[in-house]
Length: 462
Image (tube, rainbow, N blue to C red; front, side):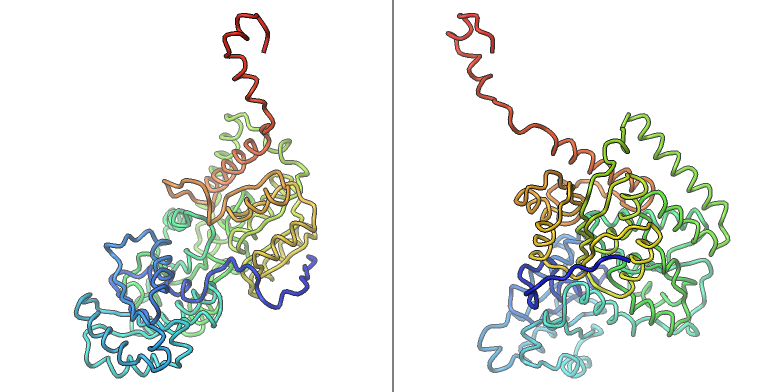
């Protein structure tokens, strides 16, 4: 069992690092093709919605977003008519078949009846109106993604209305991950399934058409690609459509052992055990060969390095086994941004199996991360650019900038799942390790002095 960290005087978040509900809802909606969005909010919330499109790398030319641009008078006197007028204008301008009408904090404060307004306006517009209340008071971005997924359920047809597609899966919430290029993880999973003769019915949501959404119930199984988001959605898909969730009790495929366990479970479910064994053998051989040829002394380098992990549960849970079993590091602190029972259960099972007892905290904010790091001695921290700045301030010499938001330039999508994904992580931490251990005390002025004419003529040695 882990030891839960307790923080005093933290009834309010002092430095939140997770976005609001609106950001989460937008992150789900942005993954659906050929839709438009009307935001009932002040103009600043349009920037929050833009973050969802940014995460999907959808440029401004393909975004169909309108904002009511609420002012103080609208909050005081009401803005229902303003929303109705914008819905009509957006419908005529965007000409999409589906329009999400999203309420924000301001709509929550007013008590705007979003569903009632959409019912009133539906006969007057061509687009199907989908109301979603996403006020920031309702939670953080993880809870917002859950709200976004919940809004999609009414559009999934009942199984009896559609023909079952054998050997097909839905991949749920791939974007709920701190891998800066999570799109590569999605591609890796799709490639593994293809090798096993299994097709992807729908990725909910990533470039998802409404047709794919309607027929998501035809899949023979679901795979949840996040430990932070989607548990309630998965349960509803099982109860309403009878679609089982695969690998619900395993960490995601981060590192050698977790990848092998994950592939083995998929192979057993789909009767593709031989394919799974081949993928595992080739993957492990490839990792060993790459590290051998590069001459990297991985284990001696990292052995007994005491580390903190500040991450989401999606990547962080899988990292624990990789760090402890495969790199021989010692996880001292595990700090997770989300908090849900399923993630806790999977993590506790991992820690019990590994026989380690790190200190753990869920639902942390920036203040709590800093407090935990300052009160517990670690040699290095796995995290994002935020943790890199904290490490410098607290005197932690090594910070691995592997998660989002990152200060790294990113040009190509790189997976963290699977065998190549492990190498991608190792490459980043290897470079950060080397940079951290380089001397910062070189006296460059002695070399400047050596270039002086009088210094050279005197024959002095630098």
